[in-house]
Image 1: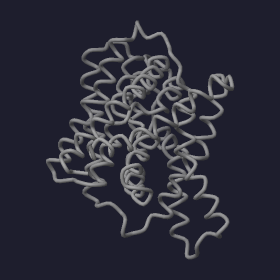
Image 2: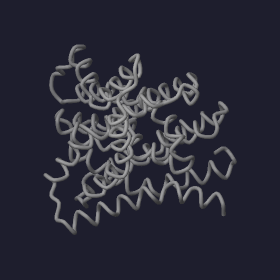
Image 3: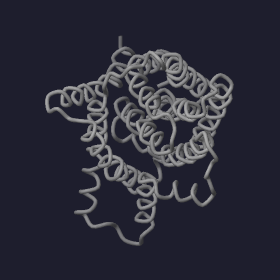
Length: 314
């Protein structure tokens, strides 16, 4: 019963915040334009503040082992490579290829994975997943630019300069770099600035989940059902089975193992939809992957936590 409660407490708050957003969409008649505005605020201001806070306030003694960071980094590359092999073999439409590969390897680590770890171990444990995110998020974005440019359907315009610019101008990476810069300063930030940053960072997770709930709408999916089933199964079952299974075999336990579950078992990244549209990929398919993988993930994440907790590894 204890394992069930741990798993339920880890997942249920995330679902409740999304349900609040779903209620708000209908109660206050938010439109897609409203959701777009909310997302700009979230990704341009609140998520960067979370990355800044994570880097600036993380104590040296709470830093994760380099081997753990390396494993998380390499596991993303492995999942992306396998997704590339499978998708390019079974899917012939280039626009769909780019959207499906990205949906298969990039999870909603920041919005759902980090709060998942926090719900299990408390706020003091957030430093571990946020530190891993500081390495994984840039990798997510580099791979996304390469993949979506490769499968535009026309001649790729990807250059090394564009790639570097795309990574360095990503708001979350900017937030992390600013946090590192301020951490290296010979003096602390003013107390009023510290308080502001901490409060913004604390607001990010509830705000992000509510916005995700607001953006949740039922769309026509019959024509994409085969793609959705394959992608969601890969994202929520195969990816965590590979990443978490190998991690357990390597002896990873506790908050580090929970962090890898948060990275590997969470649904397709919310940013997939906007980026797919901007880079001439299949935005409709990418959006459906986000919506339906998010809905199903609350069941699969619960069972992943329950299974690993039952083994006494968390």
